[in-house]
Length: 377
Image (cartoon, rainbow, N blue to C red; front, side):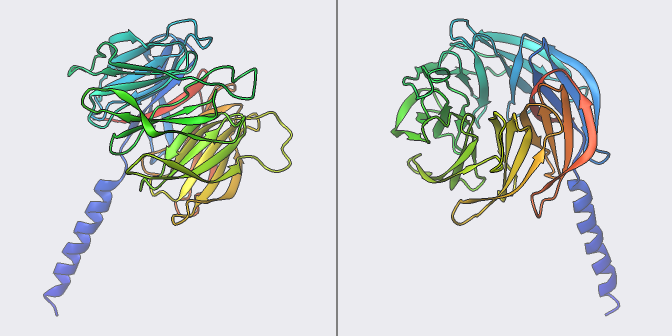
């Protein structure tokens, strides 16, 4: 019996060491905004602090950002031309993992007006862009040095919706790839549809899937979409309808079958509202959606068997117009970007209940509209 005690202590030490090594390290937080450059902070999840680094990448209206899978390159849309008549651009930067600073590589025309979202595919070979103003989807090859190549594929969306002010034509609002890179989903605010494409990860070619789309309630205005980590369900946020539509996702065909639609607002809400961002926690148990106007974040529990949602909480965002928010890599905190109050507000997140509690910490930064984490070296 005496010989087992040192072994147990050794095993305990190994387990504790494993947990210690798994503790989240400091991260860089990059902030897209409607000013003239990408802002950066160093995020310490233990002290829950954001130390300002400053402007690290100069460009016009760098609204949405995305990171290459290798972490060495950052891409941003220059959101100009929301009227559809002005050409937007996509920018490429290399990332200095020791300082967080960015080095400009190149830019390319986005292939349309008002580019509002972009994503790199899993292999890191293609950059896919949603052009809101012109209602088109484009993709570009990425070179080994991280720079963006010339246009590989472009699809012009078609159709309209019942709201004459906002749905006269298509408005591609996001580009979402399935986990296996086979399908591209594009929430189209202008047509109340999620367009579905087959994505060729070798050539970048985009072809309409069969089925080619899934519909939401007329006038809902689909904006963003989140796919559950297990790939069985997808959730589409309706900007104009302030709703989340739950779909069952057929991973073999890309088809979306509606389950239900739920409101992101309390029943007594009287404020004009446009929902903005939707995220699912890493474990796939909870869904979060932000409300601009009501200025809040709605929290839902996900039924892992049925895909249905149960609303748990609606918490004030701590500012005006929460256009974006992000769950930190450890899943213990949420950072909300309040565009019109020029601040980022931090929340504690309970991984067991999903609920958010204000952490009492706020950082000022100009018109934040997108938050993205990147590991330090």
